[in-house]
Structures are given as C-alpha cells and as structure tokens.
Length: 407
Image (cartoon, rainbow, N blue to C red; front, side, top):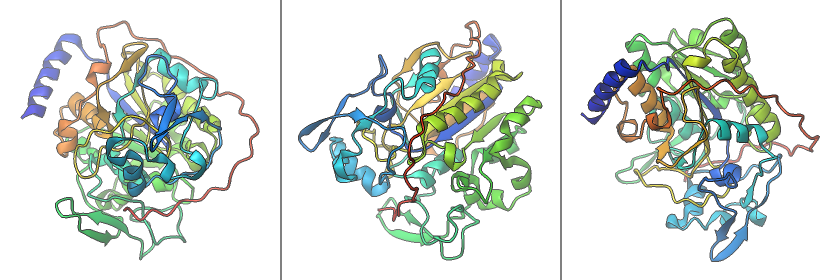
C-alpha cells in the first residue's frame, strides 16, 4: 500500500514537473568502505581513526594497491562486534583494515562527489562479500544466500549457473539458522523481469564468461535469465558499453560491472579502476542521454576496510557495512551530501518508483527510493568531463580469491 501511494504521488509530481529522468545506470565497483574512500571528505560523516577493541587507531594513508582482506559474512559480524565497530583488527593482521585514501589518491571520484551528490549513510545490503550483495542489485534479495560460491576452483570466472557441478553456496533459513548447500543457480523475481512485464528495456554489461570479472555478472545466477532468450541480447560485453551509447543505445535500466583489472578490487589499483569509471561516465556525459540519466556509482561491499558507522539491522542478513555512493545526474542537488539511510535496494526502489513498478521484496518496499537527492525543477547541470589520470607504476600484489564459507 505504501509503495502504491508513493507511485501515485510521483505520478502527480511527474505530471507537474515533467521529470526528465528516462535512464537509470548502476555502476558497481568492488570492495571499499566509506571511511576508507571518503572518510576525509568535507562535511561527510567520516572518521580519521578507528578502534581495535579499546585501542584508538589512526587511519593510515592507504596505498593504491593493497592486499585483499577477508570480508565475508563472518568477518562482517566480527568487525561490527555488536555495533561497537571495533573488531576490524581481528579480520586482518597488522591493522591492514585501518587505512584510508586522501583526496589526491582518488581525485576524480572526489570531483564527482563535490560536483554532484555523495551519500554518507549508504550501506551494503547484507553482511559479507560480493555474490550475495550483487544479487541485491538485481533482486533486492540474495535468496537467503550468505557467501561466495565454493568448490569450483577450476572455474574461477564462474559463480552462477555456469559453475561446475559440485559448486555450492550456503543458504540460511533466517527463522532458525539452518544451513543448506545449494548450487548457485536460482529462480527468484528480478528487476529485469518487472521491466520486461511493463514494456521497459534493460541491459546488463559485464565481463564475458572467459574473463576475470564474470563472477560479478550476477544474472548468471538467475536460471530463467541465464537460459532465457534475453541472455544473448541483454547480457553484454562491458567493453562494448561506450560504443553502444555512442551509437544511440541506452536501456531504461542498465547495470555495469567491470572486468577484474579495473574493478577497484584489491589487489588491483584504485587509480586504474578510477580511470575506467571516468571513461564509462564520460561516455554517458558525451552522449545524447546525459540530460535524461541518473547514474549511481557504488561499491559492492566493505572489502575488509574500516568504517565507524554501525549498520542498521533490517533483518537476519543485514544491513552490511557502509560503502560509498556517488549520485551523478544533471538533476542531482549539486554538491549535496545525503545523510538518509540508503542501501542497494534503494536503487531498485528508485527505478520502480520512476517507472511505476511494484516492489520485489520487503527490502525495496521499505528502502528509501533516493528521490530526495534530486531537484527536477533545477537548471540541468552540465556534464563534468574528466581525464583519467596517469597512474604511478606500483608493484601489484598477486591476486587470490579468499575462501568464503558464508559463516
């Protein structure tokens, strides 16, 4: 009922203001907490120190290339420590969690936040790592899955229906904590399904099956999409996104996940990853679609890095630890910092409200739809065309995917 009331109100508002947003673009980067990225951003709820138990720890200057820290379901709860946010020292040795970037380390991300909007109360949808959090981007649910797939060492690029037999994820019954191992190929309702039913378009750009980064192509875990007739037409190579936009193709809702080298996922360079993000955003800003697009740029989980804000508890699965969210659009309130509680389901709620779609789950039904970040009556902001910076030649650490048993 509340969603219906909201949609009716928006319909009246759209009629009065002629809301120009026709395209929603969700860009999903990897493994960074808010304090780690924007703890020093003026006016934001950041921190320059954390706690390791009762010990106060200054947040050291982060390196552009760093170790991949443990960040699963169990590690999230350890770090949160019942709301005290003082257990990060237990999940990574030598206080590696207690580091943060300065403005000069991420200058272009910083410029987007200064020019457009930054949300400093934006949380990952659940405790833990990439696979279940990415499911929230598509479905406002992880289907009660709490960890990354295991048992598929021979196929490091596949985490969904394309995984080898014997691959499993842990699914937990939230009413009694009972755990079951299931193959990571499920059937749950998704936003693409709702868009299809309402006659709207969607595309999901990701790494291809043979490339590192396909693990984040979460629609591979949705059986009816992976084996449906839209897999080949709507789930596309991320390397083609810029040319598609240049050629006049942008869906009503678009998800974009990177290949591994440009993902911001440790041990990959944040400088290199930032440059890729700039190229993706430039492609939209240089196109005919800039004046009708809302871009949401976020990171999929905390990556093991410190954050000082205790996540609100929505249900058994989260919310998870706070992550950055930059909102980019001609109609974002310029230079704004948004303190409202948002989560990944908020982006689905935004699209559902914009297009008059029903909620998928309790999460997107109750999530704030982020409309308050926009002023559709303001003069449209011009594009901010940035140049990817020259990255220092740093030695890259070897990459390994940490085991995650979903505890």
